[in-house]
Image 1 (cartoon, rainbow, N blue to C red):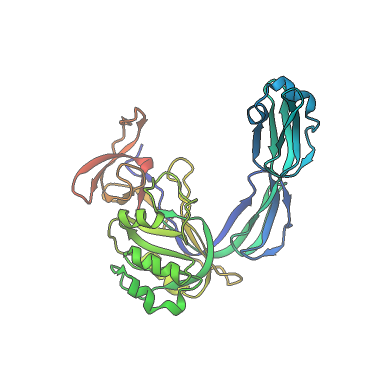
Image 2: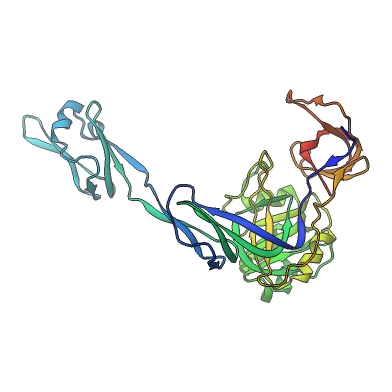
Length: 376
């Protein structure tokens, strides 16, 4: 094994053919065909999401034995029922009184179990769909599930993000690469914030995020973030293994790491060039197996494909390489490879893996699994 080998890195490119699979979580109906031109909000596929089940415990509700209820329940599986409809009626106290149980909700009968008198009502199914996310052309159909959409665009990947998908217009904030974006920076450019994906700065404050939300921003891409600001923005402490379903005003992506780091020229060059272009942003991040990167896709439509290289081409690990850690407990820290031992080593989890000895920028040297680092 050589002391250097291919290594992953974040992609940043001004010109790529980009494909995104758009699929439902369960079978449904595909609404497009190969060759169709779609916009970011075009529905690709639809399905019906089964409703939840409400269980009515008739014996408990009516305070009678289950065997007295079974003979009076006339509804069967599949029958439509509305809130307030009678489910069962039982005479009590020598026929002087009647106890009635009515449906608490609309739906259809899912089951009735005679031994315990449990009556299940499935709520009506609700429609849901998946859109195309990016404007482009449908190049493949996934039967009953969805389609693959292809576009020409610039791509910026981040190291970490929160929030799901959104669309907007790129706005390269005119600040220095080491600037902490404040609310006043957002206020100064408020006429451009509505519907914009703001790119720039070394960090962003919680007040600036609030201002961006107030003016209707579609997303923010910045170099780094303070852990406390991230906590305040989301509303709770968050892990780094999987994100994307946070209830936040817009997706937020960081491109360099945690702490205070200047935005790289690779990101700024693209943001400046395509200021004002339509773009799609997705903060979803998964750092475990099958890693998912947060991304900003800037749509270039029918512009000619440029002969540009991405940052991932022809790069390899070697002593002296600058790297970033992409797993806990050193997630987001950067450093320099000191050596690449040839023999696999046993790490704390018990796994036997190839490691890299990395001198972190914080000053100490640490053995890191090679799968947990990426090149800068």
